[in-house]
Amino acid sequence: MLRTPVHGTRLDILEWLKDPAAHFPPQRHVDPAEHGVHAGPVAAKLGVSRRVAEAHLGLLARLGLLRARRIRRRTYYRRDEVRIAEVARMFEKGW
Image (tube, rainbow, N blue to C red; front, top):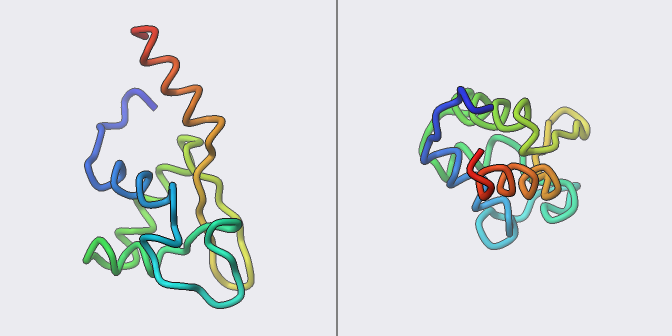
């Protein structure tokens, strides 16, 4: 995780996913607060292709900062608040 450069886009995504209902349109079949958001709305908000959004979301999921859940044919991403708090504590300690 420490070798991954901090990227403003990824920080924006993490911030938006704190309150997905405020930042993304309603989604069919899922509650964004409970299940998260799929790559389509993230791509639209960023103004990039779905593949680029999927790359950012996938990296954040591999780092453990997001949880990915497959529902029907899409993968939905939501924040892993426990892991984010652990990472924040590491940096607060000067690690």
